[in-house]
Length: 172
Image (cartoon, rainbow, N blue to C red; front, side, top):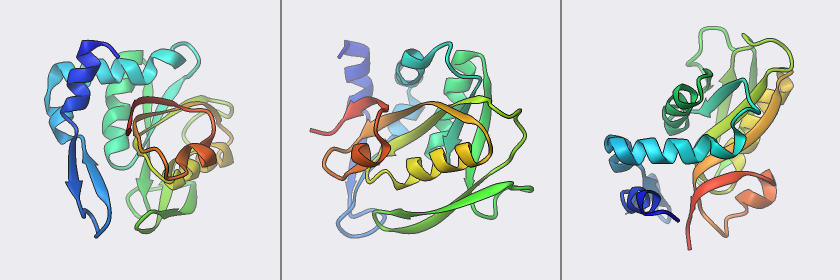
C-alpha cells in the first residue's frame, strides 16, 4: 500500500457497539473531511474499472458520498440507491438483511437499458447491502460493471455472497 493510502486508512475510526451492541462501526467521517485522503481513496475506488462503466451508483448513505466523488473523478454521472421512501419515483425496490436488522432500498429507472454501472459502497460486511444493490441494478435492466468498496471486513461472509469485487482497505 502506498503511503498516501496508508495515511487515509489511518483516518478511519473504529467505534464499538454502534449502532447496536456487538457491532464495530467503521467511521469514515475523518477520511471524508481530509481532502487528500478523499482524493486518493476515490481514485483507488475507480482505478480498476476506468473505461468499463457509464455511471456510478452509490448505496445510501455513505456509499453515495463516495460514489459522488467517484463519478466526478471518472467524468460520469451518479445514480443514488436510497432507503425506502426517499425517492420521488422509485422504479424498483429490494429488501435485504443487515448484520443488525433489515432494510429496503429503491432506485429510479432513468438510464438507458444496458447502462454499465459501477456499484460503490463504503463497507462490505455481510454483503447484504451490496447484494441488494446488485439485484436492483440488474432488475432495472442495467449491467453491473463492477463493485468497489472502501473497506472490507473479513470473516463476515460478504465476499462469499458478492464474489468478485475491489476493496481499497481490508480488516486484518
